[in-house]
Amino acid sequence: MLEAIKKQRKVVRALILREMKTRFGNRRLGYLWSLIEPVIHVMFFILLWKIFGRLGPHRMPPEVFLISGIVPFFMFRNTLSSVMNSIKSNRALLVFPQINMLDFSIARALLELYTYTIIFIAMMVGASLIGIEYELNDILGAMKIFLVMWLLGFGIGLFLLPVAALFPVVDTIVAILIRVMYLISGVIFSIDRIPPKYYDYISWNPVLHCIQLFRSELLTGINAKDEFSNLPYVLGVTGILFLAGLVLQKRLNRFILTS
Amino acid sequence: MIQLKHVYKGFMKQDQSWKQVLSDVSVDIPADRNLGILGRNGAGKSTLLRLISGLDTPDKGEIIFNNTRISWPLGSAAGVHGSLTGKENIKFICRIYDKSIVNTTAFVEEFAELGDYLHMPVKSYSSGMKARLAFGICMAIDFDTYLVDEGFSPGDSKFKVKAAEYFEKKFVNANMIVVSHNASIIRKYCNFAGILHEGSIKFYEDVDEAIKIYENL
Image (cartoon, rainbow over all chains, first blue to last red):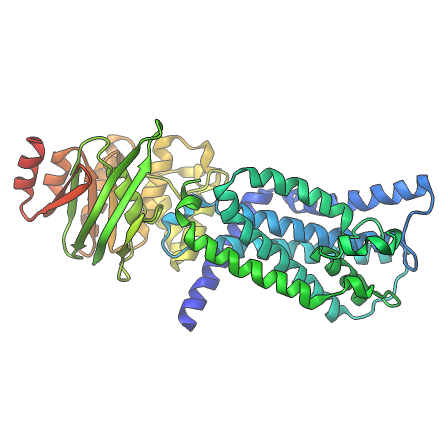
């Protein structure tokens, strides 16, 4: 058992190193690109708020609000889509008997987690260096929520992988849904702007819960609304999707391999 | 030993009709024998090879490998990534097979004669160079069973001689499974033969007998 885990760790490590090379190329600039995307998004919305006046959040600098929303969201989004596509882009590697399909998903998901953890730290430090003030609350607690959000993206990706193999149209639907999620998860627009009578319609969204919880753990003086800080709900959704994904993947093995 | 247990496999052809390639195939492939599988074009030889190499799974039944280390089909460069350099591909394969990167690189460098191309992306290689790289890596790793596809030809005639030399050395400790429509390859290397025909495989202890039957099909 221990031997098997050791072997698996070696395989996943090799896959991560390979993925880094194929994704970012041999140019050092490759890594910089993944940093540039969230920075541009933050700058764009800051500019928008400057032009259209105060639409930003209360109680914290808009830069910090955006960084603490956009970076975890991108981490979630990329984990989801890279897990979902992990077999499509690695199928040829199944000639190596020691690699199984789940290894691809684990390797890609871990790479997203590492990348966005570094990006988040870099952007928070960067914000502090240019004079934006914020007070950190509970770093460990924030890390925990970041991980939960990663698991959520991982779980959804695992679930969608076999589903998309059966129905290719799912790829397109997911791409659209992710754009919608970006807008309705409190990532760039504060949830305070939404009248309470609509809360029932948006509280199903586990990403919203994650973002709210993340900000309240990360920053002093920020409290998540009770309606949107249901950690057990998020964990439940994650667990169910994980299990369903693994079962479906086993059942639909053939479709996945030939799709 | 590799065991096939009641293996079924079929696929949908382009005209939407179903083609059953294997039905209820059971066989033990002993570790000390070289198996040659004969089959006409379209009989399902490639499908069988994909099943044994793990690129595909049976519709029904199972294939048990019993810790046999099986190579990827020789000559195919599956698993070699185009945007990685030859060296980076070697590194990856060494990592998953737990081989020394330094020794393996040195071996492949000498064997495949790629020169500076070793440090260039594989997509810039000619097909011969790619085959030499994949073949070289395959030789560097000690597999128990080598899979040989019929289309296998590693580059020019000078390299072929060298490859055959290394290959024969390998078979002191390893065996192979050859899939071909060409009887002469199988006569040369194999001491156990099967004929893949109309969805089933029949096995023959006597290779010459198998070839005779195959030629009269």
